[in-house]
Image (cartoon, rainbow, N blue to C red):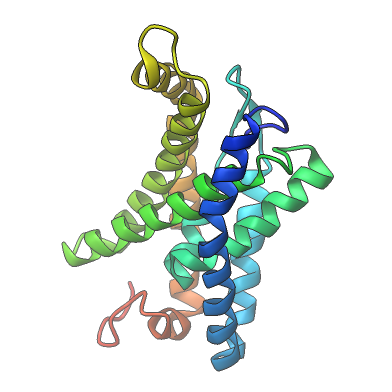
Length: 225
């Protein structure tokens, strides 16, 4: 994640920007509609944005031209849906590129696609699936955040492999190389993000159960424990 400035060929950078743009636009629309209807959600929205910014700023450099870090986007995706994280992730990544030199402007679209689109959709899907299976709530949150984090890095590995295929093995060989390098640092980071997200949700179930029920984190008949 956080593919650095100028690392992707111009055509790839443009393509990922075009792929991300519709999701970001819809995310702005859906968030605006939700906040207009429920102004009290602004505090939780701010918490989700701050969580994403802080976790994704904890950068560990990688030899792939990218970096490893927690993403924080799974938390907001569970609260507001996956599309909501596209504009939030865009703002977070833009500020980090301008203020912290994490990522870049040319690679912003690619970074948004992996961290703020694919990751949140996977986290949300895993959360809903595990809730249907009636797993313990803490486990569903952990698995969602863990899965969203790992899928972000698998997506980044695919983006880099598409841009720099192996001379002999092509995309597959290049993807295996990038993914294996990321795996060394990303597996423990994904576990840490899952645990942190679980702890925050445990706090929210104590102090904000009504908001969680309204956001359909819990069925209306279920009381969090």
